[in-house]
Image (cartoon, rainbow, N blue to C red):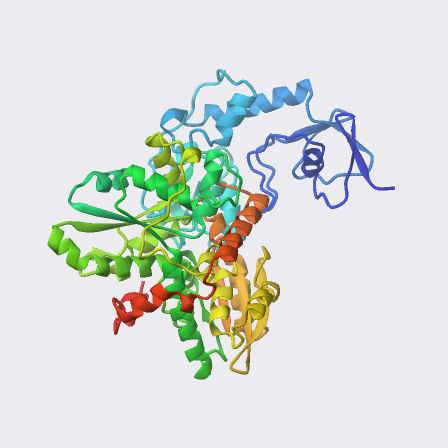
Length: 565
């Protein structure tokens, strides 16, 4: 007989559920939570998910394992009183300027206050105005809105292995802060923004640069060019009620034109450039035997590059010299419009729409400023673009899809799959594999590079040589791989690393979604690849044209970089 619980009088069987909360949700009841995420360790701080057993005992459902024949209630007078009391206490020590809060409308504390009918707070407001930390290029910290749920601390320490923030002090003096209350820019923060993604209030938010975008669009002396990253098109629609994974690139292009952007291009093209350059670098290292000690690490993810700089600077020599697709595109576009800018007396202003907050920090790096001009002038996240669409009153769902502009929007399926973990690896394998047949291409789906697993391995042959490959998402998993390689436990020739779990589709700049939604986004990415007429990056005719034109004798200058702190 299977194990079961009685939840509000309902018989609910359970098997793999790790806590009462999962069993309750299985019964179709949504208990309130502020500090619980299934991807993180259990902290049990907020106590909003408490339940009552048949003896009247109160317990946190997130931290209590289910027991056979256990009887609980999720909605009793005592529980209602407790939950409202918790919310009032949180609000009594919380900044309540909700209308001007970056998180307004998406704040879990705000949602729960509305859900439980909190119309007034009996306790005096003890909020102490604390200075905001705006030192980071990627995120903003507002300590006055922190509810000490610990979500950001666990994300930064457990998933990303960065430890830029943690709890400080004890009791009523406890805060979440970098060590010694330094600014976030003074830490080893990698700018991944995953802390902002899981923060339930406005304590950590993405740095908003929408005003700069509008200033550029309204400036007649600027030619505003925009590029859209692969992962953006399968997530942006969620903000407007469309299913996760639906490709809305056509609607994005139509909306951007209405907003006043001059030229709209697709970052998938420069992803093809990245594949071509990175594959050539990989094959060159293989032939020289340079992967025998350490593999070639990918360089597309700026948070990963920053992690290596701060945690393992001695290994930076093994990180690919290729710029990320965003930066490659910026360099190409600035060169493409250089003469026209002089003729028209206008300045090309390059905006990148990215799923990633670390791209904001990457664009600001001095390595990507040439002759005093940045290759990327401004990075907007998917969420910021959503806000701009709403500001202009565009009915996104009603937009007739439009094509992005030529010549920089022709791409292969290899460029399209960059947005998901394993995509870079698969694109490189397509490029270097000996067998170029359609059968071999289909078989790549099953060699182990696809899927949501945090660490994946596969082996291929290149020019008769066996090549071992690892695909990693999440920086803590990357650290595991690094230690295994260093200790001689594992050998790889090529390692792809994405800082965000499951890759760019779950970047902190995307509308927040959990595992189920991310799975649908990944499917959306692969659907783009399925219908692409060109499958391999090197077969993209626009890539060939760039090599014979703008990039002729300039690939090292425009497409590669030497990082330095």
